[in-house]
Image 1 (cartoon, helix red, strand yellow):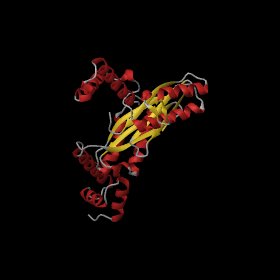
Image 2: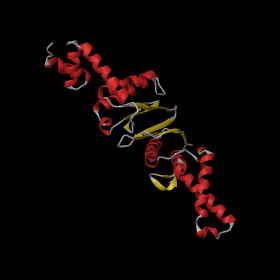
Image 3: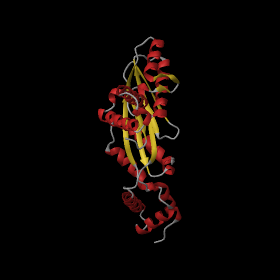
Image 4: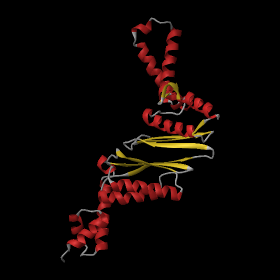
Length: 278
């Protein structure tokens, strides 16, 4: 039967499939629009299945802050072009809506189903890689930050005061996390196995240094300990030099802010999400 261009355009608008694909689907369905839409969806699912092993190294982190919580959702895709697509962004916002409405705290099947609708339309492999929900306790402040490329996001809770200065500091801490991407919050969080491995690396480097060979063992032990301590200060958030004041550590800065507002401040939950990083 003859397929009208009006029907082709209508199917194109409702499914997002190409005009030729819509025309072929209508022909296969004998002009039945609903059947044609079903055919397109099945073909889209088949295309996504074929691409399921493809790497999803691009994407976007979506963040929304409410009075009592902050939600971060990491959605990955194959190409930067799709990550900037208006439909991809709208889907990310829909995922935030559903997460807040249903009270989800992890990736659920509903997240996957929502994203699959877009994946079948665009025919690119996509995943809801991560869902993080940060609770904001009473009497605490929180801030969130998303880097301009939308691939790094952070959230920080500070307990002890709701003063504006503390809110500003919380936001500055979010920017610090995005800029320096520390691996751990504090030194006590670092696994001993990691410290042992780094110690062996530094020791091997020192053993290859001819000048180091002439130093007494107790001196070399002190130097080794110093190297490990310096390394930990570089990868632990509270021991890093603060992004807005490189003369003091983050730990020292929170003390200073606390004294300024007359409160004993402490960090609550902290989240750093870097796209594709566990």
